[in-house]
Length: 147
Image (cartoon, rainbow, N blue to C red; front, side, top):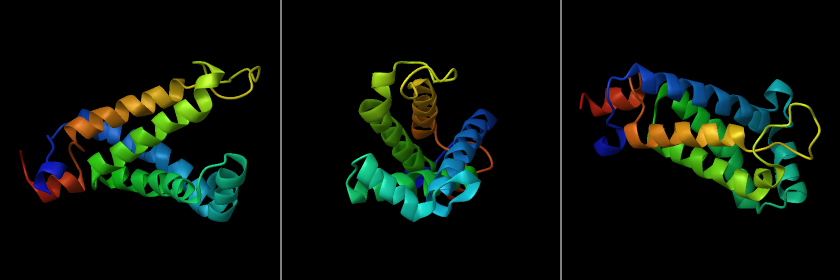
């Protein structure tokens, strides 16, 4: 368990962890709680299972990864597990939805959906956190001790 949590006292890792955590917590809170204009758990489950055609367990995991993974990243608890979940989820989103829409986001509203540039950024940040850990000011660092 200590090897899973060990991390350097690195403020750059902390910055990446907090930014990714806040972004995914906000999206997860939309899906789980209906905050920030979201549809809440039941609405999101309905959309993911009926419109996106995801199996129920996968739809449930999507919501949990974003909500609990985001919270975990914010406090720096089980950072590598949260980063792995978010990275895998973003790879899945690119391959199943966004790849067909091209690279760029749909700022002008002139394509069918969003591209995958945002997802690449999230995958890259998750990869760094997966390999290096939570950084400074994290529960992981407090529990594992100094490297």
